[in-house]
Length: 103
Image (cartoon, rainbow, N blue to C red; front, top):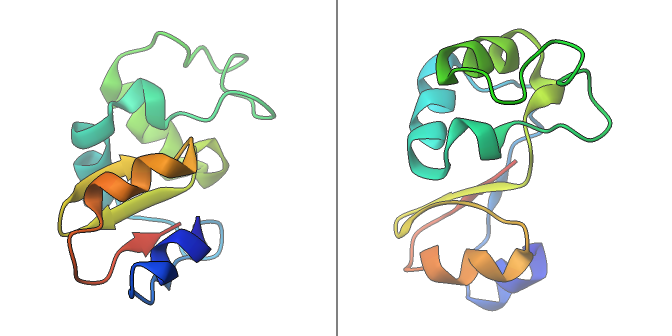
């Protein structure tokens, strides 16, 4: 995916979300665009044990704010919108110029 972004002539800013977790406002903005349930990483996490699968958006966002390992990735924020870049080809839709943020 990074190669795809760079091929579009954009050098992305990569945020290592475990080292620099997004704040509640960023999580809410991304969840509004892609859906909190889709933003929740289930595989390899405690999401099911915490009862987050099918939970209300507020509970999911609070859990992700407390434990960034619950955030699905990569997320790309670009001038053309916000996408959960799985599969990577979904990022093409938002590469309208500017600098996307991937994390």
